[in-house]
Length: 260
Image 1 (tube, rainbow, N blue to C red):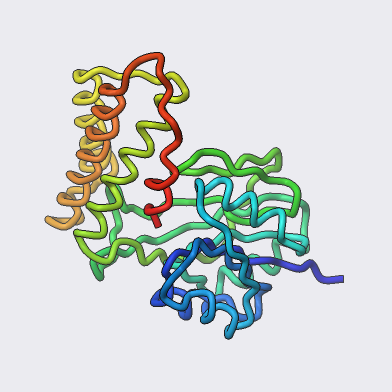
Image 2 (image 1 turned 90 degrees about the horizontal axis):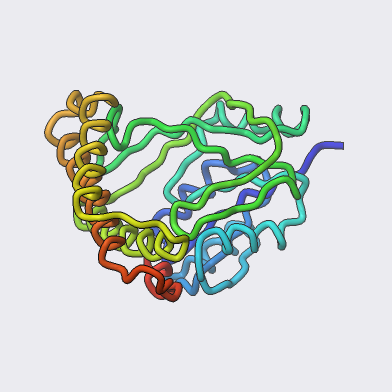
């Protein structure tokens, strides 16, 4: 008997991205949409395309993904973002993977921003673990959430296209909001950093992306992206340094909700 697959997508006003996203994996499995109160018709678009739609107010991204695992009814779950697209090779790789040993599946993701492809630096292609047997994964972390699984991880053929930041306003706005929420989460865990430490981490980030990850080869656009990444690093550690030690801040759910 063939294994069933749910493709889970978290949404918030994704009417522009969702049709192409859903079309990219048609026939692979059941689309499951976890929607955070979209006002642009996202839910209706998803239903018309045959997706299952669940409404849930976003508190943090891990909780949203873990909720998706609770409502999923398939043997396997693939986590996808609305701004990502399957390639045909990846679809075939996923079909083969779920019929084999119980292993998590890791995918190569190629990043596009501002209408262009990035090969190096902050937006260099990366690998993300997205495919899991039901019951073998838990998500942790409020913003840059990550999957925890005890299974071995296998790299899949093919890749995802990641159509990330639309423009500079979109990029800068996300970085600012991510910095705030990251800092509050880190403070609650007892993490500390001073101003000199923040400066050191900022320069280390820029050196890593611009030199070690060859970001200089992406030209002026790549340099600017790497500079914003370094500024994001500086911002989150400066905010952390300003938080009062010993007084864990309350979770800022309203800020987390705006991230996507």
